[in-house]
Image (cartoon, rainbow over all chains, first blue to last red):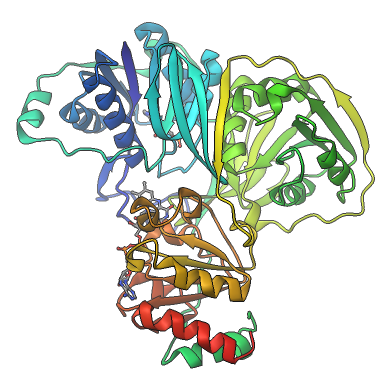
Length: 249
Length: 313
Ligand SMILES: Cc1cc2nc3c(=O)[nH]c(=O)nc-3n(C[C@H](O)[C@H](O)[C@H](O)COP(=O)(O)OP(=O)(O)OC[C@H]3O[C@@H](n4cnc5c(N)ncnc54)[C@H](O)[C@@H]3O)c2cc1C
Ligand SMILES: Nc1ncnc2c1ncn2[C@@H]1O[C@H](COP(=O)(O)O)[C@@H](O)[C@H]1O
């Protein structure tokens, strides 16, 4: 079995981004970039399935600028086998990404695609579900446990009320949630080995799909600032303030 | 202009988030229809047809819709999508699960998690864990939108919509429900509680959450947590507040032993009043707290409970 894992290069989760003064976007100059954390979890899950003998090959794919190649190398160093880099400097929306991925799926015929549930830059949470719909495949989103069965997967999902377990037949789409696994760090020898793993270079034009953006950003603004509060000296003062000043208890 | 709102429910009662989605739909304008798909979901129809602003309720019954799995919801909504200019659902785990499938099939880019409606085609949504608010104009003919329930008022009752029964087509691709393990609690729902008290890694273990629960029970509050507390197994996953968990905006949010990482702030910084109890006076949570108490939580929280009792709360 082959597993496809789409990975996105995003602003590192430790960075607090700043809005540009002209409100055209956020300032990404000299900001640390990393693999989207949910994509790391996706890569890790694919590697674990391979280690258990449930998969033979892991292909990672990233759509993004030249530097997205580093993100692919990171996944290869973790243990993926080869990469596909669809190079573009334009921001591609989830719908466009899903359309490109659907074409990659057509070419590669994986039996499973594992994506992150959400990219932490745009916070869209849609690509995996869109890809599933375009392919007509079942989906198991927000996975916290994946168990391979004879004809598919039993997946435990994190939902608002608790946990839900569903069964999906293969081929399927899975998207990862935080509790699925803890991604490994790549060892130095594996980082060296990853340099020799193949990465196929492509462009969106190779796939002949329309990925023009549908949403137009009119403005990117700072969120409302909270007024600085006060430090209280004691618990009694806190209760008094909550009761008599804020009136919330 | 006609807007379709997809109701969120458990076949017996309506999730309050749907009322917020209806308010967002009113901002877009036009007639509002609500789709209720489920199994034996008659009681939900009774509630929905009385919602203020709703003109028509569409009722679909099928065993395949019992748990509102994404594939079944996709075919159901697509079967009626032609008649609508905008399709809205809550940005809950249910809405986030099925709405992008509908958007993809309609060849539309979803507008996720909106916090404001500027006009029929322009919306505001948070990006980068709420560190930036983006105003987006959609150039798609149809809008597919998920709504952040905490930022819209909840539509009240007082309507009298007509009810139409529609067929539920067979799902496109099959996923099958196996089981559900829902957190049971007598406390209010985290997403709509007026007061929330959350614990973080500083709680040390799950048993220690008992001191938080005592306060919660006195205040009629819901209990939440940081990711670190959930990852460590102190509390279940559905307690997680934050960028990738639940977004809450209560009257009062009390953060106990939580440092205030941006991912956590993303889920609670729109609360009206924020209290932080943390022994580290440099903790970033204090930068958003209206009232900060620098103290060891293991003495401060029980004392808080005692003081509340003294104050007759
Ligand atoms: C992709 C991604 C998504 C994420 N999503 C979320 C999310 O949705 N929600 C979320 O919360 N986090 C999320 N995080 C994690 C986030 O980055 C932080 O790691 C997390 O919020 C930290 O939790 P914490 O504040 O409980 O723990 P810590 O940062 O370890 O803070 C513990 C605090 O407790 C205090 N403390 C310890 N002992 C005591 C005591 N006895 N008395 C008083 N105070 C004490 C300490 O001073 C410290 O400030 C996400 C991270 C990633 C990478
Ligand atoms: N540019 C991209 N390249 C590769 N994968 C992507 C890209 N954008 C999104 N994805 C995948 O889709 C997931 C969800 O992203 P989103 O729908 O944007 O929140 C990510 O975790 C990735 O697995």
